[in-house]
Length: 215
Image (tube, rainbow, N blue to C red; front, side, top):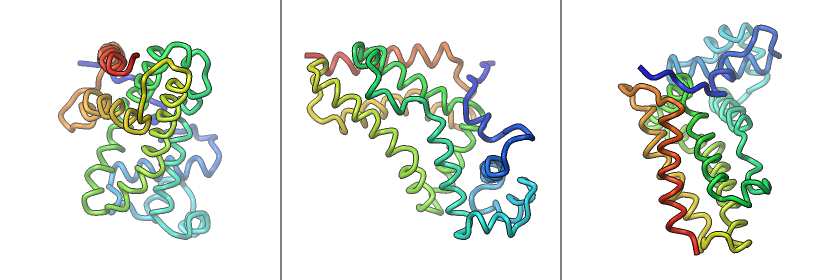
């Protein structure tokens, strides 16, 4: 059996007992969304899991569950470490290393059991609540795609890669990673991928992608 690659999402959803109250609230909300689904997780249950009153929860999130879900997603996005790749000279000097860093960190970020469960919840609940999928894309997917697009645009500006349309190239690249790594992990009957498996898939994907873009 594969051992799941540690993911920051696991820590985000299970903070220490001494963590600040806002952190505990968002962690509890994330766990409740996973355990009960978006529809099934009530503000009362989330408040109980966070060990705060229901009124305290509504004082912080007066719009209810939607604003709370967005706050959980935003906290996840802030934990990504690829946000500065477009300004990282090492990544800009060697696109192979830069793209491997992006793909590996992205895959490992969603590799843990809690992360896969959260993604699975968004996918399943998004059928009944399109808003859920839209806000997830707005808060996490779109910013991540912008980071990668900006990175590819800078590589093109420097004449390192022949990228005609950075946004499309970014979608193509992440589509390859999503298909080979991400969705394999969110399927309910799939074992988590080990770090070695992720790196092997990433290496092959980056090689194929770069061959299509080099001058």
